[in-house]
Length: 373
Image (cartoon, rainbow, N blue to C red; front, side):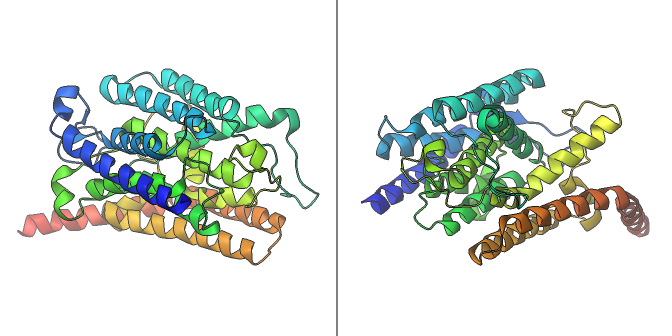
């Protein structure tokens, strides 16, 4: 019966999401939900509707109304998601101040942590000295973690398919780690994935959906960060802390696995915000210092950069899950994650010259070709 409910919910989520895309696409200009080209950091050449987040949220709502009892903790957690979608939609329309967005993110995190009981209480045996219990620090740590992931997915949403693809990799990885999906408290992981697929198909222009090109918008990217945070906490924390409706105290996944499943967004947001602050700039002011921007300049096309980043994210997730199932101790995974982190930071400090030199050479070749023609 549970499998049937999940299948019905997934079908409803995907169908509703696609229907909303078709309904809102022609209305987006009137609603003001349009991302116009023209900014130096934007890659698209025409106005694109920013209705991806609304379509995903509509799909989740339809599935919830179909299969989920109102008493479930997921209903409370979805209120936080709804808050982010509303504020994100207003930001897409009116370009709100980042402080208002941050306030909404903190409020959504509090709804998730205090209202739904989805919080980080234990970090596992990260250092090899025994499990690290957060105790009184559980609440602030959980809120910071949720807000951090929301911003990570929001800030990395710079090329087609990236934020959605990274979220899908993390969610599918959790489904693979637990085929029953009982650890994924983000409503039900297959349903979230199903709601995400129509957006990705339209965003990437697959088949006939090429004419329905859309962007996530801030509503969508913040929603994805929230859902991934919800799922990861639920999957890696004791059941009573994660509010997944089970009485088992032991978590199914080691908390350190979460670092590997969202390594790319976390590394990128840390590197970009640190780079901006070191240069005395606002950490929230957009620029083209993200990993996907640099790879696009080097590789020559955003689709190639997307494929490379998603391949690396898939590799991280696969390695983490495989070695965890093989019984590799948590401290080994944690120290390996630190090595990856250090290597990424080192690469970002050493490679910019390569980026600029190769980019200039490519521009010179293009100019030479245009002169010949």
